[in-house]
Length: 76
Image 1: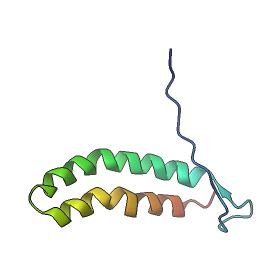
Image 2: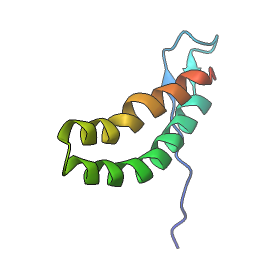
Image 3: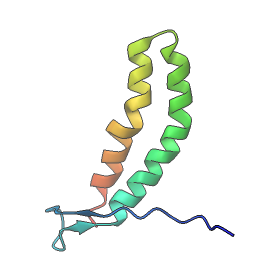
Image 4: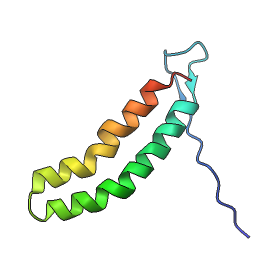
């Protein structure tokens, strides 16, 4: 039997906290990225059929806006 694990993301070398490592922010950022991608990538693919640049922006939104926003909002 195979269990489903929770992804743990670690980002070391940051100056945002004294430990210089972030665990909570990148992990929640990844989960928010995945949730946004589930919704936005199919919509972006549909829009891409008619408006190429708009579809590309929609599909890039989780990586360029959602992940960095959540990751940088949580300093630990």
